[in-house]
Figure 1 (tube, helix red, strand yellow):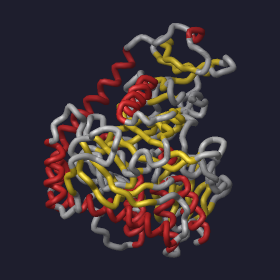
Figure 2: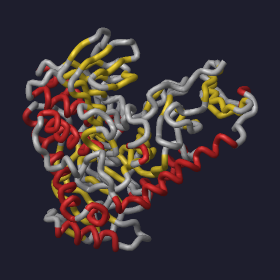
Figure 3: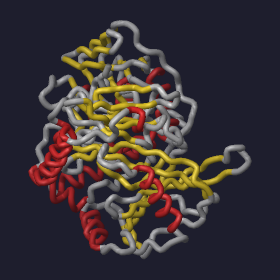
Figure 4: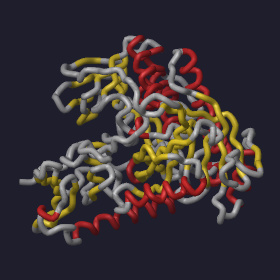
Length: 507
């Protein structure tokens, strides 16, 4: 069920997380990290272990952003096929991308064992297969490319799923999965063990030079600043012309233990589906089940109004292929940021001081990209060479992706046509309790939310990032921007950047 927070509450990932107090005074650190997700806490852990004085700031609890909404595939199987990355970036770069994700899984495994973090980490195989009505040509090209790159892949007659025949499938060995919030809880404790400081409830509103300013007026001064907030709110235009935000949908269904072979699964549909399992106890603790986690049905953020139908289509897809499903127990959505050219942007923020770093554009591989970001940014802050620096440099230009970038720019420009359209309602009385809609008020558009008690909340419908008109997301109870993916809770508070300020109240 949606909540007034702007985030669905039916995610399976519950765990006891450390509590931290807000920052209430001016302070200094060697490194200030904004964002307590996988990228932020990995960076903090690695730097603190090297003796750096680290402070981590987050508006919400640790993992309350997209890390707490992932399906936690730890994989070197990327959203962009390797043959496409080779075309865009060259063979050496594509091979380097493959090795960086494999090393990220290795690093997570090493941290889990070295720091004794109980987070359900396990190694397992991954399987990529085509939909029944689709050619296997994509699989053939990917298999040939990965062979040349030295990946230990093989083509099998089918993936190891008894309930339906996937047809030919590429096996990717030594992938992984874990419980991301348990992992973050362990990282947070180790950061503190190394004298690092973590402050939640600490909203950052400005990054400039060596100063980070919070909403309460407190200032952190640090020679190095890392913005690890999924999308950088400190960059207004440059990065956001090179990536696009998408909503992705996930369901969790109970099945008998071991009725689905534990592995990671993907098909090559567009948008593609992704599947894994997770051990879980029944609500009364009487029996252990497997939770079958199935995701897909992606669309650009703010550019769909059939979210409930997407969950139904996802359930239909899953039940057709996994008839052993007993009950649908969870559903939620998340936000992924797709970079033009298929590779994340990690490193120095373009057109900014050299002491400011970002990590964004992590597409559907956020857990491994977040770990890559921790390793790469740690090396850059410590002045060490890193083989991935140019590969993921936010300043890079990918000539082969110019068409994709142009299409994205055209898509964004089309969204500004919302300024000229009629409102969805002519008065607030038409809006049901717990829902929102856009109403025209003269030359302006107003975002109106009626809460569950019937009180009306009026907000300017213009996203403060670059002026697009927000849309109501009935599943997440949020206002979503269709241009660059900013999201706001029903009363206008920022949930996702790049917007740095809330929707303005309207009298």
